[in-house]
Length: 283
Image (cartoon, rainbow, N blue to C red; front, side):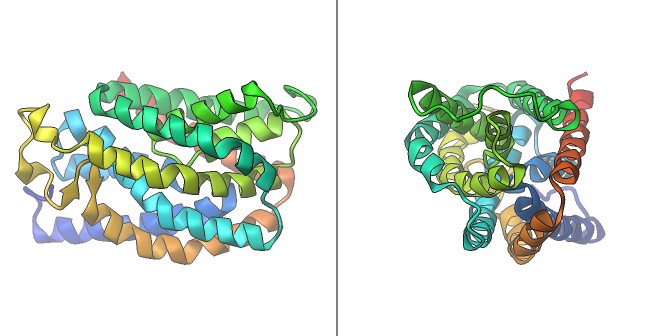
């Protein structure tokens, strides 16, 4: 993965990943998103500079993101849970369909073209951004979150799309919970718990999906994906994880200090920006 980079470029790349880890951990706490929505676009640029082939670049970004989300989501969840902000009833209803969706997403990742991952990322990120930036309090799907089959369908698609997008499920859970009248702070806190459910089986699924990548992509050699297990880059994970763990609790404090509208606007603006990056790459 690092072939073709001189020592100075390697140092710059390492410092960038460490800084990204700090920012992703902070955002995991602020938005309950696990940090994947920032990790995937940044990893894409880092792996492009490092010479990772286009055919496997996006799934490698997503698999690595899901692996990093594991410790950051656990840290974020613990901090939100300590404040009593997590809706445990929703977790009990969603955990099984979410895990089933994650498995389906992992199988899809094994065979899907690279372009599909970008399209999913853009559609979801911009849909959520529009809801957060433009919606009013009277924009609702209902006054109460459903408890029957529809709830299980929601859970399945949260798991599926999160796995294809490399995020912890916060984008979808935040969107759904606020559309059913739940406070944004509770949605953020509950999303941090969902990220734990999604990231662990999701990362394992990408190890499976990318092992061995060379068997499906003859142009990809082992030299282009060293220190990777399937579609999980160990180098990226090791550099990003430590600082993300340190900053996740700081993000939780920031989230609870912000007003509802400021939190929605900040989250929406961020999603619009990162979605735009992949629109450019699709053109």
